[in-house]
Image 1 (cartoon, rainbow, N blue to C red):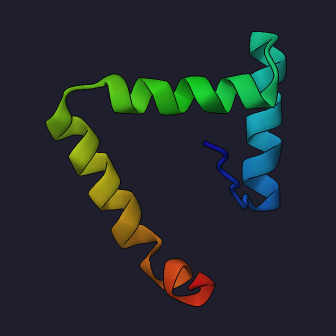
Image 2 (image 1 turned 30 degrees about the horizontal axis):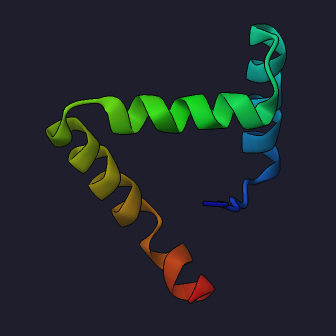
Length: 64
C-alpha cells in the first residue's frame, strides 16, 4: 500500500530533523512511527485514531 501525507512546513522540518538525528531516512522513520502506533494494544490505537480524526475533521472534509 502506498500512502501520501501532506505535512505543513513545520511538521516536515521536525520529521527531517528527527530522521537526521536517528540517522534514518524520513520514509523509514515515518514507517516505524506508524508501525509503533498500530502495534500497541487496540485501546491505545483507537484512542489515538479517534483523537486524530476529530482533530483533522475539517481538513478531511475539504480534501473529500
